[in-house]
Length: 152
Image (cartoon, rainbow, N blue to C red; front, side):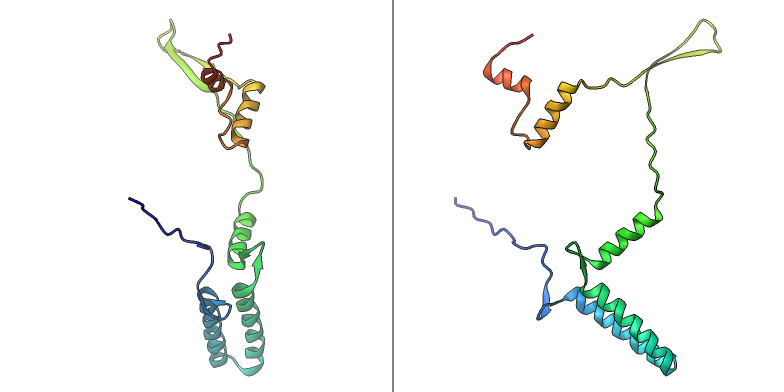
């Protein structure tokens, strides 16, 4: 009953076509070449030289440049997202409604709002320790239950 499974390795590595050129890079270069061909057919020679220079620069940039180990197109999309989104984040604290009932006046309703209960700092430090240890540390209550210690 020995079941062995092959675990894929290097799943983040792209497939290579020839040499160090990947499929993504090859497709980007082919699309860049098509843009250069269209510029050659549609523009006069001096405009074509300028367009070809820009197309080659952007093609090489998007095909071969990596920023922090990620392809440039992912960096560019993330840059556009952060540039176009609002810069200010506002946290709107909300209270929890606990009870709502009619008062003696039939038209008026009384609403009692109970604020959220905050965790004590000891509980927060215990939770952060559980997260930092990756779940190896289970917390005081579980440790005391396993060790059969009863504290009040």
